[in-house]
Length: 104
Length: 475
Image 1 (cartoon, rainbow over the protein chains, first blue to last red):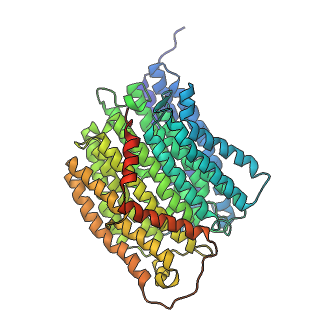
Image 2 (cartoon, rainbow over the protein chains, first blue to last red):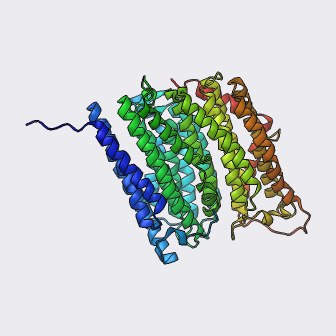
Image 3 (cartoon, rainbow over the protein chains, first blue to last red):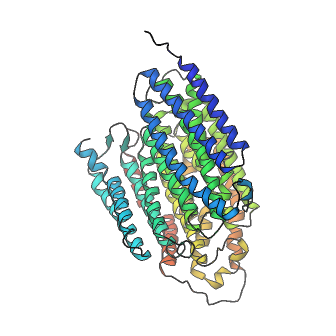
């Protein structure tokens, strides 16, 4: 049985689409939880692109980078959720705009 | 991994091991002075092991890290800056957080991340160093748990810095897809395809964000203002210094700026940053925000050194410029935020109006802040002048005329608001009898203030150290 090969361009296009969706989410959403989810989508888009690139060259490096990205995303979310708890406790809201003491 | 490679890694091993020991220690002993002592001991040990590591010469640790004189130079700089931050924090964070011990651990991990960035020779090390530094900083910024502004600043920094990191990551993936390698030295490929250009552009844009260059500077004033004063000093120096060290090495080894479009884009960013940073700083009444905009301009100046890599000035001159400039920038920025930290022991003293008549109330601190301001403006006899002179020389040597003009115009505007700080401090006022609650904070800023003048009058040792360090650079 032959496995159909997915062209790398298609995977990169999907990764780019996910990346842009995440970026738009970060720019548009005001709820901190959704901001973090959008950020996570962007990170996974990068991971997908790395895996596609690794598959193109037949190297494990792409997948290793994906594991590094996973670990770092987990660390980042751990800190971020701690901040979200503080935000909820202090401002009674998860809307990023209520925390607007600093003039932009 | 071979013996010499392990020797070369000694500073990293000492710092990582020391941090682990401290994690254990703070679960038994929770006393501020003890933790501070251990932090300084770990940092001193790291500093001492650099000499030992230098015996191994330039070492490639697989293809991951390149531990050479350049990396050791920045390691020493980051460790000293971290030590100054640790001492200044003592007495500042205590009054603002219930538990202060973890702050020092975060400070050490952040320093480890910065050191890794200065030695990175591979996208993996680049990513790890950058994220170890950033994630430590998120927690450090939000550390004071009785105030709102730090929390807000931390969330802003986390989201925006996360976007920058993912942009860099996506760029790395594109470059890897085109070249088949993640080692810096081969990251340009041969044909310069569209995807490769896009990837390299994304990496540079993400780095520009971390250096808070226009148009990626929006986060800077808010984070500077919201973060605790000693952490702001750390973000302004070590965090930006690590990115700058990595950018210099990246540009020198990949020769990415030989792509015309990227060279042009980065030049444009540099000019706009120098002008916009200085102009916006004129409008500020909060010293932290003023220094934030001034740092945007200073990072724009620094890009002259980065761009000089791809010009007639050559890699060595560019690296030497970058190193001397960063040392000067570290000393004067830490001195400015150090004075702010010492004055803010009880309540935050940030508005420019609060500094009126400081010369009559706290002459020593006022003198250091004045020295830092004059040095940031680039007045002769300060290290800021030496740093700017280097940039000027590199720009002229590399025929980067547009950038040199922007440097001159930016500096001219800058003199106005730096002198504004000095003049507001000299306003006549009745002499008060304020004394510092601690002696170590003022002592640190006086040392930094002395360093501004000493390195400004007698810069030879600094220049020699930089030259010695780059002898193996780029190899």
